[in-house]
Figure 1 (cartoon, rainbow, N blue to C red):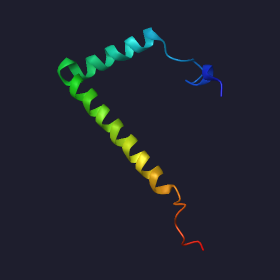
Figure 2: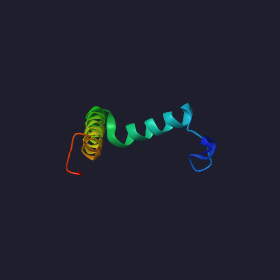
Figure 3: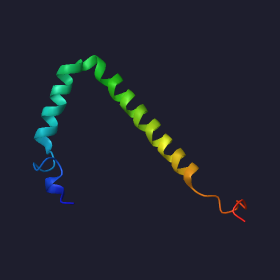
Length: 69
């Protein structure tokens, strides 16, 4: 896959685009709610990763399991 066409053919977002997005988020949520918003986003990400690793652990077959014989 070509990374240049990854974002709808416009390429990867650079620093100016990220600054504009950050400024818009700051305007929408305000400075007082932004830390709690980022904290909740981090907790959600950690919970998602934990759930994914648990589901992968459950899917791995146990080589010591003799039910197949």
